[in-house]
Every structure is written in C-alpha cells, then in structure tokens.
Length: 501
Image 1 (cartoon, rainbow, N blue to C red):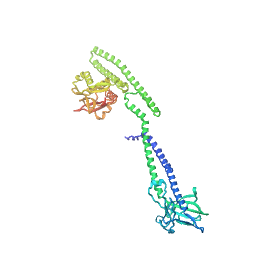
Image 2: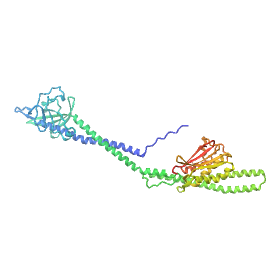
Image 3: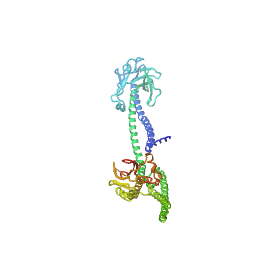
Image 4: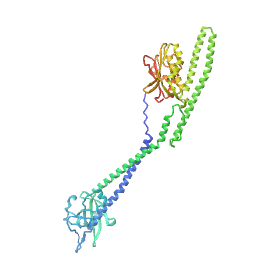
C-alpha cells in the first residue's frame, strides 16, 4: 500500500503580500541609497574641489615676475603657506626625485588650509592635512614645487581644472589654476590625498544606509499592520464559519466580505444550499418511506395476531410466530430508519438545543426499558451524578434508547448493564456498560457504519443502532467512543460532550 504524498502547506495571504512587497521595497531602498549618495557626495566633492582651487589661487598670488622676466615664488619665511590670511610662501630646495610624498614636508612647499569648509571641520575637527603643489609653465617647465605632480588637463569655470591622478603610488585629486603673471601664462597645480575624502564618503554612506534601513523597517512595520487590518474581514469570515453549528447549512453573510472574496463565498453558499437541498430530500424520502412502511406493518401484525388466535394447528402457529418476528424486525428497522433521518445534523436548528438534565433522562429511559431487561434477568442499574448538557432532548433520548437496546441484545441472560453520567476531568460524559462479549478492536470503527452487524450478532439487529448514536453524537459535537468494560468482559459505550455544553 503506497502512502499518499504529503501536501505542501500553501503560504498565507499575509505572507504572500509581505513577500511581494518586501522585494520592491528593498529595490526602492537600494535606489534611494544610490540617489542619496549622489545627492550628498557630489556637492561634498565640489566643496573639496573648491578648497583645492582656493589653495591654487592663494599660491598663484605669490608668483611674481622679476625685472629680467623670470618667474619666482616669494614668501617671508621658510615653512608653510597659509590660505587665510595669506602669509606668503617659501621655497625650499628642490625635492629629491625618488622621495616619498608623505616624508617630504621640508623638501617642497606645503600649506595648511585654515579656512577649510564647514562640513570638513564638522566631520574632522582639528584635522591638519598637507597638500602638494607645483608652479609650472604650459610647456611643462616647473618653476617651483614637485616637478612630477600631474597637471589637470583642460579647465572648467574660473580657469580651474580638476582631475584624479596617481603620483608616487598615492591616489590624488589635483586642481590646476590657469593664470598669467605679466604676459606669461602660468599653471598652478595643487594635489591632495583622497584618503580623507574616502573616510568622509564612507561615514556619509553609513549614515545614509542606517537612515534608509530605519525607514525601510518602519515601512515594513506599517505595511504589516496595514495587511493585518486589511485581512480582518477574511478573519471575521473564518470566525463566522467556525462558530456556525455543524447542523446548520445556512448561507454565509455577504455584507462584511471584501469584493475579492465575495465570489468564493457565493460559490460556498451555492454549495451549502445544494447540500442542504440534497439532505432535506434524503430525509424526506426516509421519513416518508418509514411512515409508509409503519402503517401496513401495523395492520399486518394485527392480522397475524388474529390469525394466531384462530388457528389451532401447531405447525401453523410456528409459522405465524416466525412471521410475527419478521414483521417486528421490519417494523424496528423502519423505526430506526426514521430515527436515523431525524438524527441528521441538518434536520434541527440551533433553537432546538436546550439545557437537559441527563440524570433525569437516564431515569426516564431506564423506566421504559426495565421490563425488557427483567424479562431476561439482566440487572439494569445507574450510577449518575447531576449533569446538564446543551442538546436536543428527543435526540439524546433516542441515543440512550439505542445504547440500551444494543446492550440488552448483546448481554447474556442474568448479566449486568450499568448506565453512568457525570464529569471526568471537567468533561461531561454518558456511558452504558454491559457484561456481554464486547466488541473486537478491529470492528469498533465498522460497527458505526449503517447496516453493519458485528461478528456473533444474533441476526435480530438492523445494524442501525450505533450508526444512529454516531449521528446524534456528531450533531451535539460530542465524541462517541467504544471502550472495554471496566471489569471483566463486555463493552462500554461512552459519549463525551463538549466541556462548555
């Protein structure tokens, strides 16, 4: 016997909506991060470039032309050139050709930008960075500064050009200022290590990433809250279906149902109406058939009794007795068919359910079945505690009648039958225990089926008694259990009602 494959559990609507929204929101976050990066980093780079251009202009102000037409850079003291206020520049000896940029503070002109942009001061308070410079002619001849410092090609506005370059294995940002000293064009180039810019960019990207991440988290929380609120009508529909009585086949309300779910609910209502109509038709057929059988059977039984009184032949008497037994069984089957039809959950509504005193019901049923038990010498007793359940009186009466009928049929003469009711672990219960042969475990499910007779049956049963019990228990949301007797052999039929019943 091959096992049926396990069905994969479909994701919930909430999970699907959240998943469908998460990917676009993540993509939007990435786009927003890129846009913020471009929005903030580009002006920041422009600020750095303007600082370089001001440094180049400050150096250009120190370039003069001598009487003989040669160009030179002058300053009052050796050291560094300050941008604000300008204090001049001083030249040292030419730098060694293979020296390291970071170690040549005394071999070439450098300066400290005291008027750094405000944003730079905020991110790096007290930072002191050195710059490289070069004063050269358009033909490449260096007048002062680092001879190998790259020159930015072309120039943008304000006669300043910018370019990224590598000098002595150091990545630089250079700005070249195009000016004239006298009639001689001069190029003033300033280079700055981009390390500080990278630090600022990384910190700025971190701030942008954290900010966008917090915004995404807030959007996801609000989205999840919105999805939960939007799905409330579906949850209310689920609660409405769960609260509906099992015997009720009434259509569901359409007023609180969203438009997307309305076709599903309408189809479900159509199915419920179809099932209700089919069930009602079946019940009407069984009821009519049972009623139609009961009338002629009653007449036939009466005629057999008259015939038995008029007949003196012993052989005829035996035949009439067998006919009477067959008619009684047929009448019993007709009555049980009628009871089975009336026990269907859809045959009664919620208004039929009332509070029922089970111990009083047990007393009434024992009174109606006592003569039959005494005729076979069966000790019929009860051990009942006061108990109330919510149910239909005539249905529970029919349930107990069938349980007792089944017990009497299978209990040998002189046996015992005990009816119990009460609460066990807070669960209301009703049970009938007999001292008969019991029911094998393999047959305890099959005896609930209609017209099934267990092994060892005397042939008098119609096979509907326990099926009726099962239907009545189901209509009361109760559980019908077939157990072993507490002592010795026998069966114990137990009905466990809902704890709130």
